[in-house]
Image (cartoon, rainbow, N blue to C red; front, side, top):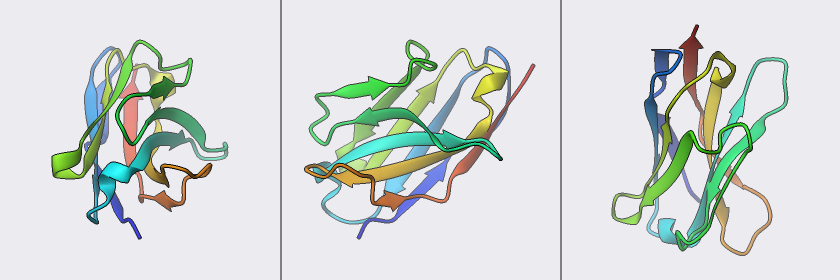
Amino acid sequence: QVQLVESGGGLVQAGGSLRLSCAASGHTFSSYDMGWFRQVPGKEREFVAVLSWSGGATYYADSVKGRFTISRDNARNTVYLQMNSLKPDDTAKYYCAARWRDKATFAYWGQGTQVTVSS
């Protein structure tokens, strides 16, 4: 079992930056791929970024590529999402998720943190 707690959301003006954090419980954090997703009310949750358990591979949604960076600190059991050049379209609730390294689906999810970007 992995428990995930996100933090760092808030209100920011367009063009600004935020860094989201996701703290994970457990001692096997380094064996999980970690991802960020986001959801707007009335819409499906969408993929934002994923970082492999080894840290050697990252993938981003086209909509955030070049603006967002996912990273991890295994010593702190934490994954981050640095968000720069924020746009009003980035407004959403952001969720952290964990996937065991040989699995296809994310089995563990946090409660989410709200990001609101004003124009």
